[in-house]
Length: 57
Image (cartoon, rainbow, N blue to C red; front, top):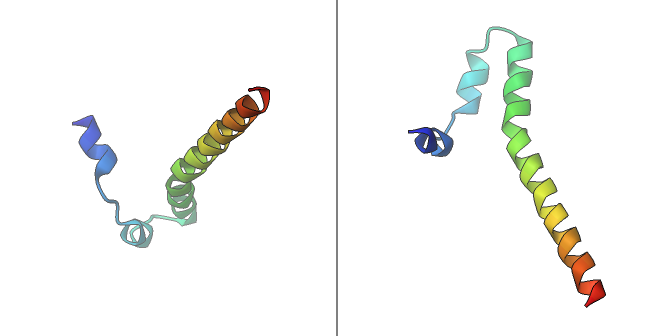
């Protein structure tokens, strides 16, 4: 059941429209972008490690 919640689509504009105040809206925006930032950082780290490893071969 936990995996199902990870792949569900979230309607962000609807959540923001029903937000009680501006801080909730900021939390939704930050929570939306955190996974993208995390995976971009992970991809960069993997690229850096692979590039560094190729130099020593």
